[in-house]
Structures are given as C-alpha cells and as structure tokens.
Image 1 (tube, rainbow, N blue to C red):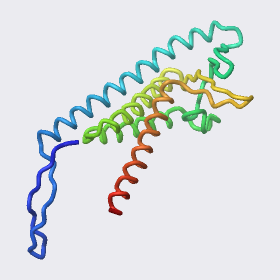
Image 2: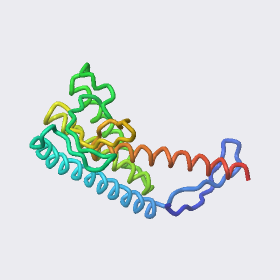
Image 3: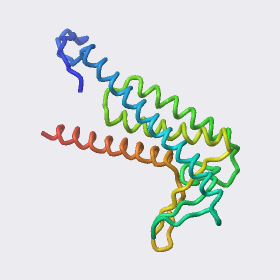
Image 4: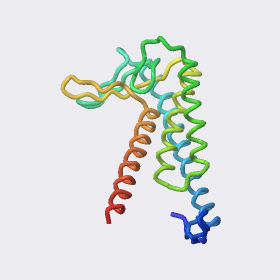
Length: 193
C-alpha cells in the first residue's frame, strides 16, 4: 500500500475535516510496480498460450484420431472454438469479428484500469485476463476460431476443452472475485467494530 498523509479540508459549513491523501512518490512507485507486474503476467500468459498452441496444433494434426490420453482424467484434444471461453455461444451464429471486437474492447477497459492500479494482486489478475484475451484474439485473427486442447474429465463428465489463454482469464476473474469478497468482508468487519 502507498503511504498516506492528512490534509485539513473545510466543509461547506466551515468545519475542518482531516482527509487522507496518497503521497505522490509512494503512489507513483506502487502504480509503476503494478503496471510492470500486470505487463509481465500478460506477456507470460500470451507467450505460454501461443507457444503451446503452435506445438499442440501440429502434434494433434499428426496424431491419429486427433487426441492423446495423458492420464485417466486428462486428454489432449483438438477443438476449434467459435464461441467464447469453454465453447459458450459456439454455435457459429456470431461471426469472428464480433468476438474479436468484444475482446479488444474488454482489453482496452482493463488496460485503462491497469494504468491507475496500485495493488499487486489485482495487477496479476488483470494481467492474466489481458494476456488470455490477447491470445484468443490472435487465434481468431489467424484461424477464425480459438484452438482449445485441454480436456479434463471424471466419471464420463468432460469439462469443456480449454487452453492456456482461457485458464489465464478464469484464474484472473477468480482472483478479482476473491479480492472483492475479502475486501468487502474486511470492510464489513471493520465497520462493525
């Protein structure tokens, strides 16, 4: 967290009220650290996603049947997803440019959020989402669909196939939700004291 200092402020009724202000040097350093971390996570997710896709598309194209059993609960499969994460809305009714435009808009909003961010946890979360969204946009631009490979299953039930970009998005969203729940819980707890 950044350092704070108090500055008196006068309310319209003339009473002085102390307010907390973030000191510029500490705030600037925290924002720079968060931006760097978000950028590093985004690049790491994007690179891991694209490298794995380059390798797995070729591997599965050469594999009879297009799938490889790795364990009793995990397979590598080749699925072209024309919808959003985990194949939702994948009936092909929407052209790829709709999903590209939506993903780019989300990335732009998240980048604006990252510009003023000073919390490292949130930086990791947003970096994962941005890197994942960018990885899937690259697929849609190159192939018109997203390449998914990872098939987790148990007792005949299969989780929809996904890729590293999807994992980055889901983990990032999960981190944001966890942060929101714990922040709200902390604020509520302090409010009762």
